[in-house]
Image 1 (cartoon, rainbow, N blue to C red):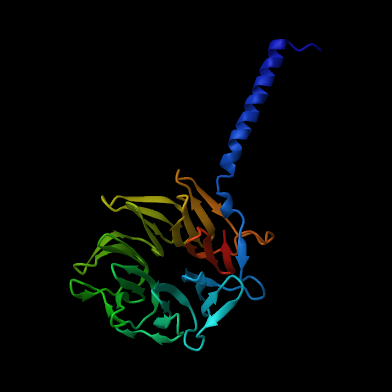
Image 2: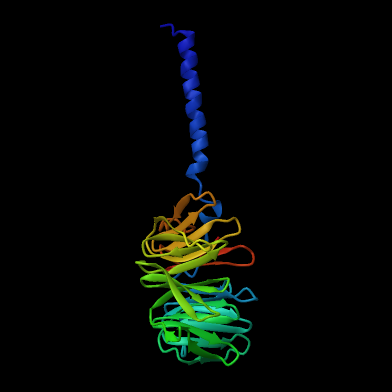
Length: 314
């Protein structure tokens, strides 16, 4: 059977168009940056370590807060630190010079990283130290019963007040910009003017504001159900996507917003596209665990991810 030449040319043109569409579709399907598709994983053998938080000293050693106390990790060995003093859950850590502040379920502790001397910080804090951030020369601490300030000069903690009255809400996340400390709680988000000692609610009906990041002119807030963006200048609130419990937020040098959640890592590109990276039990180079509790970017632009089954580094 003879096929008309015009028909054959039409078929060839359609086939070529399909091939071009497939070629252009391929990059979109692989939109996740390659560095977040494969990982070098640590602390997975025998009994995997559940890492809750981390920070890095000037010597490159990681200080890890875990479900079972404080540890150091130099890339090879995991060493417990003062297990007879700090036991149980370590929620947060903050380095101030040669001092490491450790927030845990028994309050706030201070460790001299040179001498190894460790002691409990005295003051008004009686509950858990859940989150910390250094802001305008002080360290602010979110606790199970309100907001506190740590003064390194006298090494003591006092309550932060609102018009002279204490704030009693459970605080889960903190981030500062200009003269304001943004405070994420169980049901609301507010800003605390550190100069005037006043607090103002900026969003309520929020469920578990567990992670925050001030990023340019916006404040990113991770909750139990989604990602919220607040304009620092106009206060405009935008809800972006649905996520299962956002625990950590950070941004890498390429401008990708990284979200640690109960269902893996989400990567939000500069174009607003969001892609998910999950743990794969059959792939030893996949994300170490399913829940990402903390994200730390070191001076070499390595991204360290704390999970319930060890550390991942990309």
